[in-house]
Image (tube, one colour):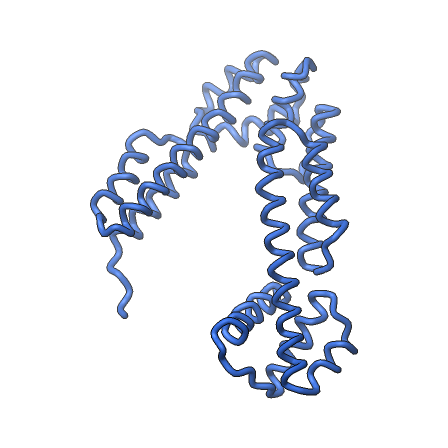
Length: 262
């Protein structure tokens, strides 16, 4: 996305100029970048053009762009982290309100669009939770979590064709065989148990991988490459979820690769 690339470019530029003291060169390319990114952070074209008439005001403009990017990025990232926590607790209403709060103050169109996408997803998951109906446009595992929460709230699980299809898609991602999957799909109780198995395996795998990544990074940074490698080997010794096996293998390959030339 061109806009995202522009924001990344001007963020690096602003750090070089505002923090490291690099000179701001107001050539045609720089003026075009600042003019584009000013509008991308909701500064009017007229205000941006006025600011680009001199180096001091252009530097001030760069600072304002930098501030809006930083605030918007931090706000959205904090909201995403909090949304994940609320989803884990089953509080989809609270998660939706959190994103509405972001949209009530965010001015940068790019971050507003990202927040709106997230709000649409949360609204869709809330609908799944309320009705039990599958939405083909939503993430499979998130829908399983919503359906599992619905069961916990006392609703009966309706074993529809859509739910069977969803479970047939997600079961292999949790290393559950086709035979086991088909056996569980013979009853709502079996389907409920299958949902729980898929979700619990991903939770356990994520926790194990993140903890190992933390230890691996600490050991790598201290110079203990063999100890860092062992963290990923330990993951691979027990991990069955394909996604997390691939991630551990990638980390291990990265540790085995020669360092880049200086």
